Image (tube, helix red, strand yellow):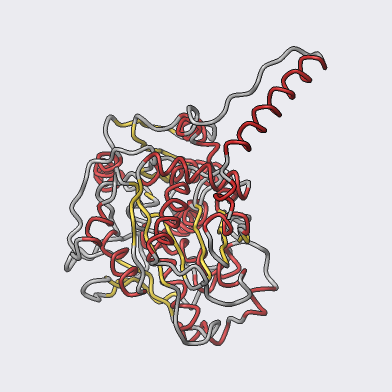
Length: 427
């Protein structure tokens, strides 16, 4: 595709041809895909996008894959839910949930980035694909590799949730569990990538892989009727998605799909048990000190985020902020989203909901402005996180009299709860 011009170092600006390379040889900075925006401006319009299938590939001029995509034909274009009941609970006027918990095929935002990475791996001629993962990426790489008929190796921490382990192994990859946390896994995978020359989605294909996250931002704007929200809250793990959502908003203006003007303020959300980016943000420094993760939010438990610095820069440039929340607050966030909007998210999503609540209460997000909460994964993969917090089924025999008795006791219980309420509390 003639809209892709090459790779450029984010730090020193040194240019490279398109290749499976992710680190600058001059300064060791990360590489990023470059585009011919003037050409894209001539080729792409809102009408052309609307005429295409409802998938992430409707924005293909702004994605780093030449020709037709090989996988992920049904990934992306997930619902943007107008969350009126959650908005009422939080006391805000206009609230949306961008729901990648139903992304195809493995129910997380990772299906976006992996669609790009595996298509690019095929383009480069790789026959083996791999990744280091906290779960969702492992699921997605395994599924897309199976669809493409590629050999696949997956590396995960040994303490991963069973739902995510099964959600990987069902596709038949060689899955290797490592004693250690994600950062230990990632270090090993960097060595394996160098020695074996495989296509690692989040290592040597990282410049292409991360570009898939832009589609999350493109879709928010299109689904809002081609307008920017005023505030977007995004979870942060390795730091892939947030800077690319910010880049998406910028690119929409560069290619003329959006008029110039203020872009959304962007907020980062982390678990208190693994919050190196939030610590740096609150300490007003660019130095991100690695931490040892200790949280139920395993999908965002990355103590040394590869793109953490770029998260900080995107948040600050947008005028946003960030917060961390405790594990109990995360569980409350999961329950709140489920019980108001019928969306069951994993702890990463519970983190984002809880952080949004905190930011609203702090007054950092005004109650009368438009807000988008980013939900990036599905709760059915991580039921261990809430298993002890949910009400267990009420057991009776298959007799109407037994249900009558149960219903009467429940009604009495509810009546008693109502009687406990002070009428003044209702006003």
